[in-house]
Image 1 (tube, rainbow, N blue to C red):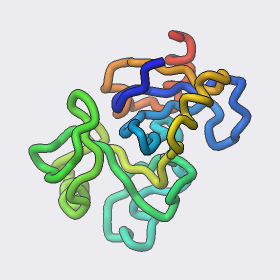
Image 2 (spheres, helix red, strand yellow; image 1 turned 120 degrees about the horizontal axis):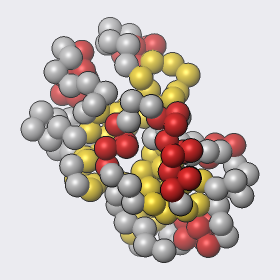
Image 3 (cartoon, rainbow, N blue to C red; image 1 turned 90 degrees about the horizontal axis):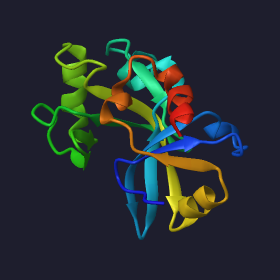
Image 4 (cartoon, rainbow, N blue to C red; image 1 turned 60 degrees about the horizontal axis):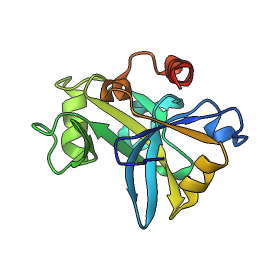
Length: 165
């Protein structure tokens, strides 16, 4: 079981937590402090512009990233040339960065859903907690192409990846 930033977790039917039923999670951090990632295949019930603070923004999909810090917006992107200060996660995927720049580029349509994904909340595990969940059969670890993060059909990701494993 090799979990690294850039790995994907695929929930198994053995996992009975409704937050993670048929979930695909992209791992952004995995170290001696624990693990952090985002559910990349479940849309949030509202769009970005439906959040009071961003009501002047364009309608853009939000994803239910996980049950931790659900009052915050997080993002993954692949445009470090435009969005400064992002943390490289894997290949060409970056975590966060200058949020004001990201919103401005979203609003003027310089970047699209091909380049950025917004999340409400994230997933987090304490040290060794994720390894224990994998050992007990709740998750499978996969290593598909990074492009799936920005898939135009996120609702189909779980089925596609689960079949592969």
